[in-house]
Image (tube, rainbow, N blue to C red):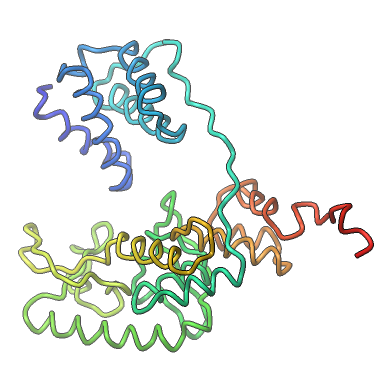
Length: 321
């Protein structure tokens, strides 16, 4: 196939394999970098040796993390296996890099409150859900009104990481501010609908199955973007969910202002959620379900950052105190 059509086929094959938009975007970016690094030569004329050399360049000269190197390898394997139909042969150096095990960055309960005290508005409400419900940032951004159950105190996460659904807790502390926020969102969406907009994107083929659902209140984003955009296919003005960088920048600035002395990001709240639940005596299987981990071994990582250590032991220096 021609170079101009290559990326079109990459996106088509990724859609057939049900890859998420973020995975597809990452794979396209790695393929573009690989082609440019090889002097714009077509990948069909290259082989596993060039792939190995590219990965070596990333590791030695760009000093990328092991996970980044593995993502690049996965993208190129997908390119040769599923797009060019020329699977990479046996070439030394093409095995996934060994990922080091890092302990998660966890704040104390007091540290969490100090960071939250430096936030306000929508970023504060999002951070409260990240910590109080253990959400990933993208899951928080993509929350829809129908997935918030105030009566049962639950949040339903749809199509989370790995395209899996789950149910997690809705903290009672956000009940009043979240209701007030949704009232403001409903007024905004109502005004947009009155002007001929107010549509939201629907998953899968629901646009065809339920034509009016894109303007129904239940399908609206809990955290909509401040502006609408024009959607060419539906010939309508749509509202996207809030961009993750809104919360990322606010949380990073709040972490600096709080003086907690640690690097604070949105995912820090999720780590703190899991650790504090385990400190409170929650069952690790329950925490696994709330976090949406496929394997309990992933959740067990948090037992190593508890206040008294993973085995609940006391330091010999503290004995007798």
